[in-house]
Amino acid sequence: MNLSRRNLFRTAAATLAAATLPVSAFAQSKKKPSSAAAKTPKLIKPKALQSGMTIGLVFPAGWTKMEEVEAGKAYLEKLGYKVQVGSNAGKQLGYLSATDKERAAEFMAAVENKAVDAIICARGGYGTMRMLSLLDYTSIRKHPKIISGYSDITALINTIHQRTGLVCFHGPGALAPWHEFTEKSFLAVTTPPQPTSDEKKTKKQYEPIVMPPTEGWKTMTAGKARGRLIGGNLTLLATTTGTPLEIDTKGALLFFEDVTEEPYRIDRMITQLLLAGKLQSCKGIAIGQFTKCDAEDAAHSFTVQEVLTDRLAGLGIPIATGLQFGHVPQKYTYPIGVQAELDATAGTLTLLESAIQS
Image 1: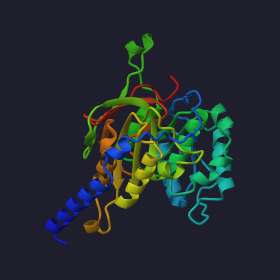
Image 2: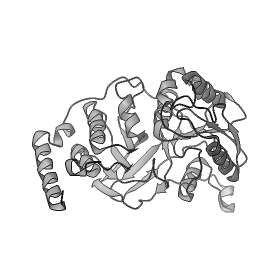
Image 3: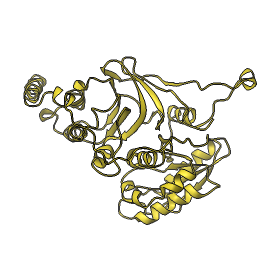
């Protein structure tokens, strides 16, 4: 189909969609969020990551090749950390790394091991949701540690935060290579700043971490919003909605992104969150990049940006798109549970409080 006919189709389709279900329909909805999500306990922060500390490398979702594990271990050691590799390294059970019980046991062993100072999940894939009911959340709260990962790990870090109050990290997995941008952002959020000689004499107040806009970002709805930072992979946020694992979005800054999803599936997931009242209760929304999400049949589809605009522009809250986190080589680390500010006009996200113990 030539370009003019394709544009004609999109114009007609957009007009039909607007006539059938206007954007404002959800924005004006009085639908309240489901009450399945329990109230998040008092916020607790993990200890800062220091050079020489031990990182536990765990496999709560998909399987990995042993050479990938060794490369990830070597990279973390190069950064100055010791690495303790979990018992499920190199294992495979279908698309999982191991059974649900084995993956839960490996994760809890890292949590309760006093020699392990922080935990980084090797990768996402699939399987984290299957083991969440097997975790000991009381023990996790008693042993607060940095827990980092993204993609399928979205379910793990948000569930742990909501059930324990522990700040978790939507950041890189352990498998190498990390981009320099990714490394700097992760360390900026998880390690203590190095004070100057003058600052050592006085107690230095926390200096907010500003994450500047990156190439390709856009303002959907201008404005600023502050709130508790939560979110991750859109598929996991939608899939857990209506279950005891669903996220509490009331008064929050929500962020989400996805990978290898057709525009109509992104539409379906966002619409599910709208029907559940999850997006109407947010203070603002930071939307990441949708990697490899172009429609296979572009002539008979909306683009992802068209879907986002149609579903979200009428919410009346600050929204920015194309931010840098999740399934991109250069990614910011977003701590789950801390207060942050989204400036959708300038494309910045600022952490208003430290994510680690001072």
